[in-house]
Length: 399
Image (cartoon, rainbow, N blue to C red):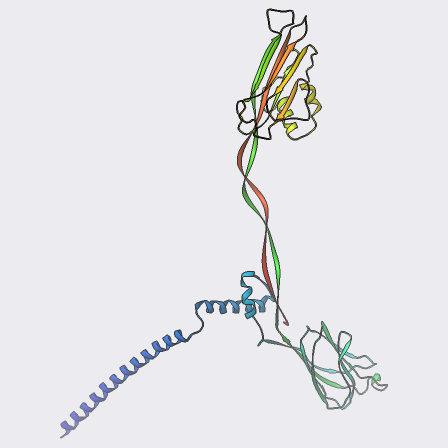
């Protein structure tokens, strides 16, 4: 009988156990489905997409920065977000004073001063704890009376508030003046509580943020290259010397017309007049060319070095180009600047004709021709640049 009873209880226990296990699995399955459904529903019903979420995070960050720094500058690309930045629900309460004090004697008023800002709201309680009345309580903003209370009774408490118009200070002035009180008798004990509540407001303005910086640029410049085109020594005999020539024609030929900037010739009309040219860049003729291109008066030392005179030598010059002659020239030298392409194809630019008109003397002469070409090259140069960016300055007032 006992065996049957034990078997019955064992069977009942096993049935309950399996039933509980099945119920737990059902609950877990239901909870699992519920969580997934909630996530899906939240995602579907969430009106804030990922970009919107980023926007609200950004706005919140800007507000936090403003509360810390009071003023920040934003790139103008964020100007559309400014209207969504506000502090409408935020107020700042500052307790200016919680004071227990006695009125002064000798007709001296009790005075307290506090810093305030426009639109601050001032709340105050003044409790007369003594058995003596207070003659006058006034609160001034600058020199204007904002609150006035006279003859505060003993054990009386006054409470009021007002909004600051301009600031920047308010003054609490308590006067307790009678002939007897001026002797120091019947002082009043006061409990003063005063606080301000600031409405935080956002103001914005557009500013120009100027950044001065140095940057490298590639710049095309020109080097002036001087070329010796001709360096000729020759002799012109007298008119009576029939065995040799007393006449010569000298063509002025330029070997390279590309980027030609100028050309200059010089004639030495006496054997003692000679130019020694060791360097085609540094000599009297090249200095003369450079001087003329820069439109400067010729240096006297250069002029004296170039001048050569001989009345027996007749000189004729024929120009085949439209090149312009320089401002400074003489009978035996000249310079021509090239500022057009009309004669760029001409190799022979001009012709000199020289003849010896003397019947007695032979002359050793000299002819030099130098050209100047502009050769372009690219150089790297540091330049100062200015970058002006429009920014929006945000500032909170009230804190």
